[in-house]
Amino acid sequence: MHRPHCWLLTMISLSFVICQLPFAKTVAQTISVEARIDSIEMFVGQQTHVTVTATMPEGAKAAFPVFRPSEYLTPGVEVLSSTELGVHGIENGFVERSVVYTLTSFDDTLYYLPPFVVNVDGKTYESKSLALKVLTFEVDTLHPERIFPPKDVQQNPFLWSDWSLSFWLSVVMLLLMAVGYYLYLRLRDNKPIIATIRIVKRLLPHQKAMREIEALRTEHRGMNDDNQESQKEYYTKLTDALRRYIEERYGFSAMEMTSAEIIERLTKDPDTKLLDELRQLFQTADLVKFAKYSTLINESDANLMSAIEFINETKQENLPTEETVKPQLTAEEQRSQKERTALKWTVVGIAVVCIVLLVYVVYSVYQLLVP
Image (cartoon, rainbow, N blue to C red; front, side, top):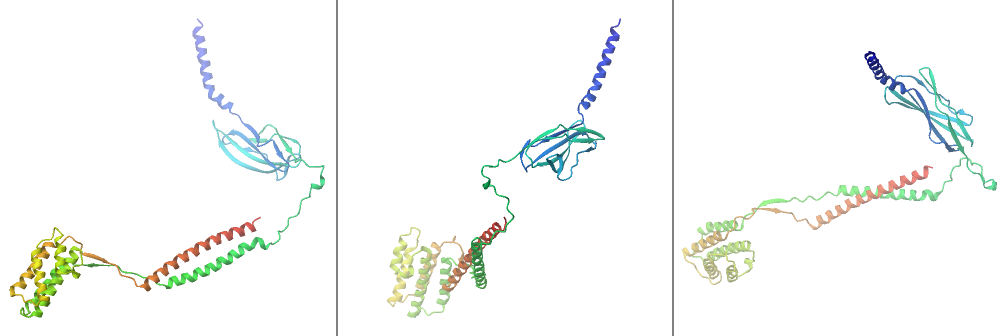
C-alpha cells in the first residue's frame, strides 16, 4: 500500500539531485589566489619573480597589493616593480588575472615571504606563503690582500695603434674613389662605337650570270660581228660571266683555271649536264681570243644560247636571298672599344673595393667607440 508513495519520493529526490548538478559544478569553481616564485634560491643582488594569480568570476573586480619602488615585502626583500599580465578566461564563467612582482635582496639568509592578499569584490583572499633563500659568494678571508675595492669609471687612453688601420684604410678608400671618378669621366667622354649590322639583298649566282649575259646580248646587237676585236671582247665577257657563275655555283676557283681544267673539274660532278656544248663554247672562245679565229654570225648566238641553257640546267633556286653584312672595325676603333671595356671593368672593380673598405672601416670604428 505504501509502494506508490515510496516510488514518488524516489523520483522527486532524483530530480532534485539532477537539478543541483550544474550548481554544484559552479560552486566547485571558487575564488582563489595563488602565488608562484620562479626560483627559491638566488645570489645576493640578483632578481627573482613572484607571479600572483587570482581566479574569479568574469566581471569581478580584484585589487592586488601595490608596492612603491624599493619598498620591502618583508625586511631584507625589496619589491622593485610590478607588471600586470592581463586577464585570461578559463571555463564556467571564471577568469584568471595575474600580476608579476620583481624581488631582490642584498642579505644572505632564508626569508619567509608572507601571503599576498588580493581583494575581490570587497572580500580578501590570501595566497600561500613562500620562502626565498639568498646565497652569497665565498670570500677568501685567508688572503685579504687579493680583495680590491671597486674602482671609479675611467676613460680609456687614446691609442694610435687602435685607430691607425682604420685611418689608413680610409685614406686608401678616398684615393680609390678619386681614381674611380676620374676613370668614370673618361668612360663617359669616350663614346661607344656603334657598329650597324645591315641586311642586304643578294642575287643568286644564276641571276647575276643571266643579268650579265642579257646585258652582253643587248650590247652585241649593235656590234660588228666581223670585227675581230669585237668578237674577242664578246667572248671574253661571255666566258667571264660563265666562270664567275661556275665559281659561285660549284665552289672552286674557275676564274684562275683554264678552259680544259674547268671542263675536267665539272666532269667529276654527276649533276653537271650539257658539258659538250660548254666545252665547244670554251674552245671557240679560246680560238677567238688567242688564235684570232672569226666566228660566223649564227655561231655567236648559238654559243650564247648554250651558256644560257647550261645556267638554267645547273642553277640552284632554293638559296637564301638575304645576306647579313657586319661592318669591319678599323684598328683604331677596335683599340678604342677594348679601352672602353677595360675602363668599365676597372671602375666596377674600384667601386666594389671601396664598398668593402667602407663597411670594414665603419665596423672597426663602431667596435672602438662602443664599450
